Length: 148
Image (cartoon, rainbow, N blue to C red; front, side):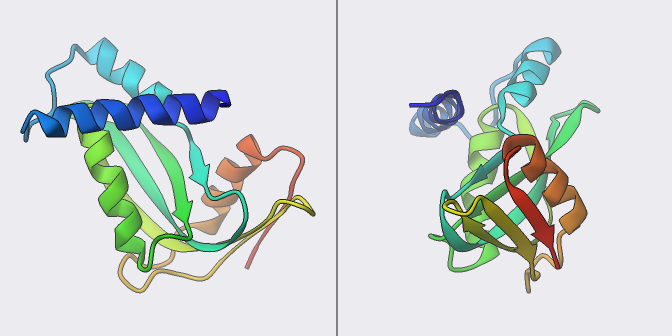
């Protein structure tokens, strides 16, 4: 398991733990801990191969000003909202707020090390693909990344 997968697993476990206890409100963490939670959320979490929908999400510390933009994409989502419905509860469990900035599609060719960002979401509108590309470049350093 790589570091990225381990971080994602820890975040998922925390979110599940919180929901299982029937909590509707996020835990009240000190601002420093909430900012720490923000820094531990991976910038990019997409499927390792294929063409799929993605969303660009702004996450922010509740009641604070610290924020960052993340990319999430998966083949399992029939609609862009299905991705957001998975991301939002996990972030809320960490004391973070989510706002979807838009969506599109990503074509991920792991063999040729290529990523193509294109399209738009009917429900959320078109994501700023240039922001998505910059986020992808920070993770997929050896890839050719294009946008349409």
